[in-house]
Length: 134
Image 1 (cartoon, one colour):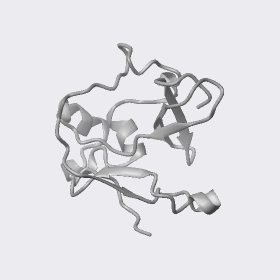
Image 2 (spheres, one colour):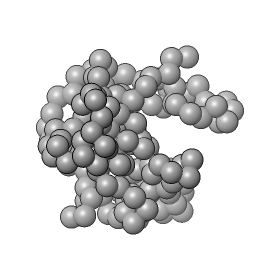
Image 3 (cartoon, one colour):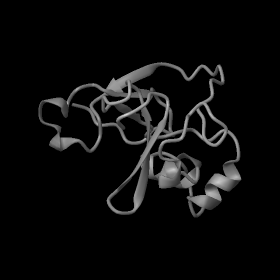
Image 4 (tube, one colour):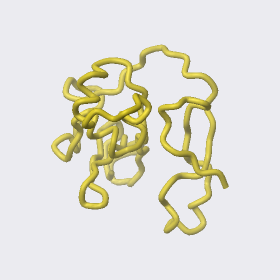
């Protein structure tokens, strides 16, 4: 998480799940954005297989651990350039609809920052991971 912006920061949580973050600030300053969910648009069959065939398509990548399983993201991708050819973020010019904010999920330890509206999601998208309202 300490550096450079535009690179992947992948870590394990709960000793089992990986989480993908995008480093956002200059090298040496710890700031990143957790990617909590994606709506599968391509390779959906493979993503389902990697997730052990969930019953609903909205359960394929609707959480940070699920997303990493569905996209085969693990610690080996830590430090990868997200503009590279191994893993990347692509601007698809899609109109996702209204963007909303809410408090983050699973950060009760964060003191005065736990209720900050630092979580962004597409309103009414069924692929969004759970939303916590203040």
